[in-house]
Image 1 (spheres, rainbow, N blue to C red):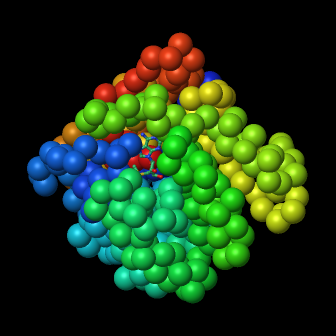
Image 2 (tube, rainbow, N blue to C red; image 1 turned 180 degrees about the horizontal axis):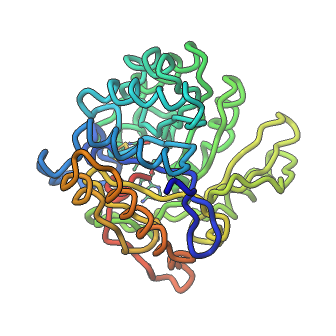
Amino acid sequence: MNAPLIDPFARAITYLRVSVTDRCDFRCVYCMSENMTFLPKKELLTLEELDRMCSTFVGLGVEKLRITGGEPLVRKGIMTFFQSMSRHLDAGTLKELTLTTNGSQLERFAADLYAAGVRRVNVSLDTLDEQKFADITRWGRLPQVLRGIDAALAVGMRVKLNAVALKNFNEDELPTITEWCAARGVDLTWIEVMPMGDIGNEDRLDQYWSLKDVRARYAEHYTVTDLAERTGGPARYVRLEETGQKIGFITPLSHNFCESCNRVRLTCTGELFMCLGQEDAADLRAPLRAHPEDDAPLQEAIRAAIARKPKGHDFDYSRQRLDGQMPRHMSHTGG
Ligand code: SAM
Ligand code: SF4
């Protein structure tokens, strides 16, 4: 019954990303429009339902949980969920509990997260310039995020910065951001902007800064060595010989990483997306709510969904139009 989740392409599914809310206290221009309509509360999985859902996945062999959103730390009561998930870490069934956050609430929650067993956090930050930060996030304030990062480091968490590479925006900050990370022992990954959701009149092809060009920019400042290491995800790594830093590149559009994909994504309404770049999703909320005392129908629905996991995604910028563009927002599926 509890055999591990293996998809039709022999990939073991051991990594679940969970969006716990579609709401956010920022409005990053590449992610959301200024006026977003959010889901009514009854559509969302309650914290207890999220717990049951995640625990069922852990029972089926999921070893890594990444909590995301929207902004996960603005979900009311979310610390109770983290505390409750830590029982799977204590039991040894879950190997890692982590989150991706914009950092705005980290100062407040870093110690509680650490106490719940969170040892690593990804913070999304695209610029170290206060005005530019306010411009790109619309509602965010840089000093608050920097205090959050300091708090996470102070409690002993490993911090990784995720920066979206944006043309004419943070191109010139590459050495500054890199050195800032080196000075704090913070890891750094660059992400290519992806065609997700309707975000108003921002033109994505204008924003697109290829990571090939980011790498070339690094080579102007440092000796860059490509590393063979992969983590089952879309990241590739290089080492900067001068600083010893390992820099990640997430290039979902220009390279195919699908053959080693070990992850699925759960939305805050209980839909399971088997691939970030495909529309197919399975409704797990229905079997969860229909059988409050019995997990077997939910387990069956999860297995049926994994059996439909596609081989790969269809994004393609190459013909200068947004082939494979997804109507969903990243904040819905969780980045
Ligand atoms: N609010 C949290 C945060 O910002 O880290 C978690 C959710 S956010 C949707 C997750 C990640 O998706 C962030 O690193 C963000 O920069 C990234 N993201 C959002 N929209 C994107 C897009 N269109 N292309 C590439 N990355 C995007
Ligand atoms: Fe919010 Fe994260 Fe989207 Fe920015 S990227 S609007 S912080 S969900």
